[in-house]
Amino acid sequence: MALVTLVGSTVLFPLIFRASTWACLFCFTTHEERLHVCQMFVGTEGSKLGQCKDALTAAFEGLSDMEINYDERSHLHDAFTQMTLSLQEVAAARGSFKAAFPSAAAKMKRTIHHLKKVQDCILPCGVQEATRRFHCWGCFSTICDLPLDCPGERAELGCQGKGEACAGLPGSPCLSPVQDVTVKRGDQALFSCIVGFQLPESELTYSWKFAAGGLRTQDVSYFRDVPGAHGYLARIRPVQPTHRGTFSCVILHDQRPLARLYFYLNVTGPPPPGETELQVTFREVMNWTPREAETIEPWRPSLGELLARPSALTLDNLFLIAATAAFVSAGVTMLVWVFFRWYLSGD
Image (cartoon, rainbow, N blue to C red):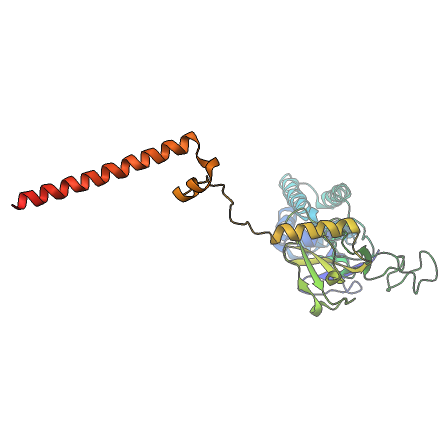
């Protein structure tokens, strides 16, 4: 088990605080609460009060090395609060602290053993909040001391045998820091940002970045955000030579990084023939612009065309010529009549 990273305002060393004075009792009760219990048992006399406090400390000495699941702290705090109230009731009933303290400590030990167990660290990487544990001997918590970067698939170079440890992680197989992904041009590339340890259920986000130009790197200064990629899966299709390079995925909880994975995408070969034809068709469709709509208009021949083409002198066309001649004749007659009326009215 790879431990430990200390979390707290002050870093405490085990050899200094192995004394029983740092038992769980002192993490979950206050000095005033403990003093009040002893005062109820023996009063305020100095010598008897000191004996009571020493007896209370000695009774809980067995809980000094306890490791507790960090999420169970509130339950344990409630249990100690209830224990304090029970001791006050015993004191009020004129009971003896010499019997009450060991009994309360034994009951508290059983309560701790029934709490949710601490999870072991899962190699080889990541900030694993689910494994956080609370230490009663110093009233602080620790998590697994593992690197943020998660390795990819097994690397053949530099590994002497299956299961050989590398990267300074005991018991972990020799792993490559960057996972290789080889895809043919025009096919689909799929990256999965998944780790082997438990992740928080809420406020979890994924950040995808890309180092272009065929770079194989873990230097964060070369990476740029990948737009549109927000989940634990990232897909590229169709893959083009410009996609050759390193992709990275960062898993964040409330903006705090938990793990980081790297994928090197190697693009090989020409595009599949079927895909090429599809791409050509797609480009033709995208570049197509609608032409002006073609309309079929009826033929309207002139009088000269009608006379020049005997086949055009159909019954309908003859009627049309007669109607036109009658209309012209009526128009001319009307104009002549109007002119004479005007002329005669002047005389």
